[in-house]
Amino acid sequence: MREFAGKSVYKGIVLGPVIVLKKNDYRVKREKTDDAEAEIRRVEGAVAQAQAQLQKLYEKAVKEVGEASAAIFEVHQMLLEDEDFQEAVNNTIRNEGVKAEYAVAVTGDNFSEVFEGMDDEYMKARAADIRDISNRLIGNLTGRAEEDLDAAGPAIILADDLSPSETVQMDKKKILALVTVRGSANSHTAILARMMNIPALIGVPLDLEEICTGTEAIVDGYGGKLILQPSLELKEETEKKIQDEREKLQLLHELKGKKTVTKSGRKIHLFANIGSVSDIGYVLENDAEGIGLFRSEFLYLGKTALPSEEEQFNAYRQVLQMMGGRKVIIRTLDIGADKQADYLNLDKEANPAMGYRAIRICLKQPDIFKTQLRALFRAALYGNLAVMYPMIISADEVKKIYEIVDEVKKEFEETGIPYRIPEQGVMIETPAAVMISDELAQMVDFFSIGTNDLTQYTLAIDRQNEKLDDFYDAHHPAILRMIRMVTDNAHKHGKWAGICGELGADLELTEEFVKMGLDELSVAPSMILRIRKKITEMD
Ligand code: PEP
Ligand code: MG
Image 1 (cartoon, helix red, strand yellow):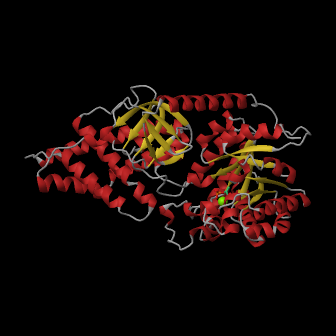
Image 2: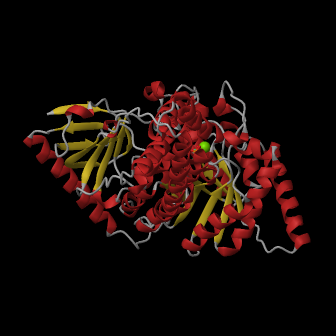
Image 3: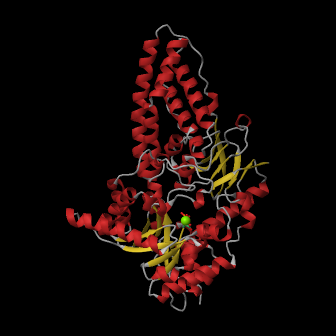
């Protein structure tokens, strides 16, 4: 029995055989050629074939994991068109007189090394994308059929690093878990694993050469562990845990379709948090009563340009239609800090969490904001939409937002485009917003408390810094008092208040939140039924 630690990017526990993907076995020989131009034409053919393959993959991914996650295949298509890459391949063929396979392999290695050496975590993660496209090209050049990764049935996939296209090509039903030696939590593979609900560990120090396909293993996403050849005792323990998980889930599913009401008749709106249209499946599966936080910024990530009004309108309308009249609260762009989009060319900042982000960007660059508002107000005609604004610190900001909303309204009136101004609320996620919540409550329709940032700013603890985990007290009395204060101020002015930060899903606090009078809790879809159980059992 051998145990390895890694970083868990999606929780869950599984037991089964492993499939080892020894991608590095695939080595390209340095073969010479006399006809460089013929080799260059072979590369062109392989590129065209790759473009068609990627288009298919993109369409498959849109259906399975949504447009935002599928966008990576568009990025791959663009990387294939990159003139520097093509020129480097052609020059290698001409100058060294080598065959296409070798030229592509060398260029792919060089380019991915450049990306790997960059400081920016996002750019670093793109090295895997470069390796992915060069492997695809080599595969096409050699006529090697794409490996059928899932041919062997349900298994734990062990790999050096998985590319997004490999991940999305796999048949979800046949993967028990994903474990990689390399890869970052920011990689698209990690994002896809989370979307696909597959337990995944990254950064596991394995020597893949010495592990055989078929070896039994346990992936414990809760403890961030991979255990090879587990003892009989541990296997039995794990099987029991898996069975317990299944039974708990089964019991919870009996709560589907039930109301979230305490025994004494208090109703709590139990909503779900999502990041993309494709997450709606989990929302419906877990019977959420609405969406309390749609992090719209995910529509802006993994792209090369801002999403157009039409693209946003289609996404918002789709969510509203799929939720069929249930409330959908879409948060306007909360980009910046850990969520960066290169095309915005934001400066590097010493304190990005306290920097140029979220509503600050929207107020300074109103064109970006107006495009989003237009898409939202047009989509509002298709369901029960509410919008909320992030990172508010002053009443003046709310006034400025309303001025921009009025401009958008005026433009619609002038052009005759149909629209509806939905309910508008603010996120309470700064201590400043808490302290002026009495005033803010008179200006907005509702409050949604973002405890993730509120805790970060109140306790002066960078939420990204894992070294501070021991200091991060999610139950700190300052936070709980703030939540109470915000709720009281909302109610004083006849408005409702909810929580959409992670604390909202903390079962130890559910009872306290209900007692404080919170009207809504918005949590990860997988937590909905657990919280409903807790609330329905409360007096
Ligand atoms: C929060 O800050 O609590 C919140 C819900 O927003 P995010 O986690 O996206 O910053
Ligand atoms: Mg926040």
